[in-house]
Length: 206
Image 1 (cartoon, rainbow, N blue to C red):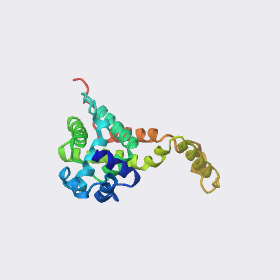
Image 2 (image 1 turned 45 degrees about the vertical axis):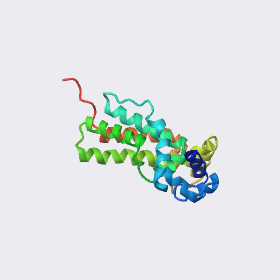
Image 3 (image 1 turned 90 degrees about the vertical axis):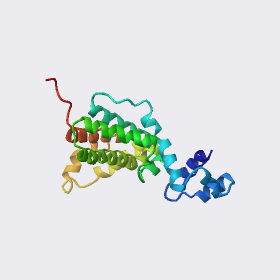
Image 4 (image 1 turned 135 degrees about the vertical axis):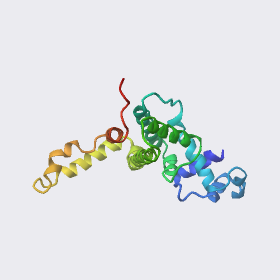
């Protein structure tokens, strides 16, 4: 009940402005009642954020291909964050350090270590993938929430580029029709490039 009410309140505000007092007013209880269940506001937000990550970890099983494990986990994490913008507003503030976030971290680090990266390098590359994935979701979330309006927005942007003087912007003029494809397509292209560059391919048969 507490988490459900907190999620609804967060949908109307954000993690930065969320307050336990406002949650208490919504539920008709004194704010101190929450401290029987959660240590503080941060503890409650971490629980909400971690619950929102559950779809990304549910049923995920590592394979013998570290690159594919990274790809699947990052795709699933971004998809999950785009579908739960309350969770996105929380997880973009930092790791929850709870069950679902820990599984995501373990899967990615394990894949990088199995791919042959040394521990310090694996940690750096892990952060690259997390920041790229969460950052992409954060950038794409406003338009993702609008659904059908997204295509019209992209068309309007392309139309604005089309109007630019060709002599001043020749590169834009030659490519504007292809600008702003689907955000999924852009993310997957970037993810593939990162994996290709940062994660060694599986060793071939000897």
